[in-house]
Image (cartoon, rainbow, N blue to C red; front, side, top):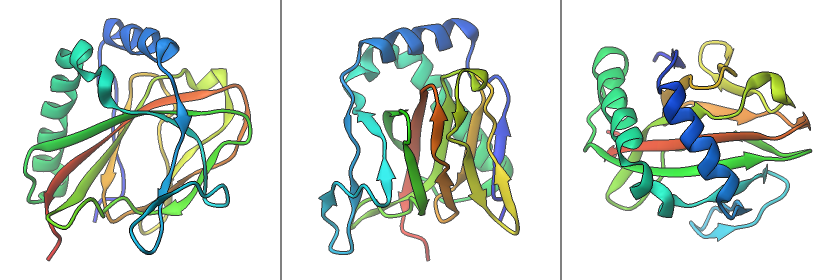
Length: 182
């Protein structure tokens, strides 16, 4: 399994500026995690970040469509997974001390699994310290911190975000859905 595929300059500078402006206007709420019973809970031992759900997507449909096309192409060239071309999106923000412990993203619903995860870097990597995306394959790989780069990885890959030491980090996270893994 290819643990991490980094796509440089996945969006244009103009699209990146629009996403930054959108993020500045959004209301971010504490992010939840799914417990062993499948319930959404606040768990500050495993995750400390903020989320803005996808109500803003319609205003940026061309950017999202570009990313969705990119994900289909990355899947075809690198991962070769059965996908449904169904996507889910959210914007995440990490503030001082924010982190996300080791986890996978595969579970979505009774019918679908998250096949691929994409983390589009919105913030400039020089504007914060810490909050590194780590993806565990045969070895741990560090995701790109460059604004506009997309970090794409398998839904079964364990990954985490290290604690943020300074500044804030904003990313657009998306999942490509598909039939359950066999």
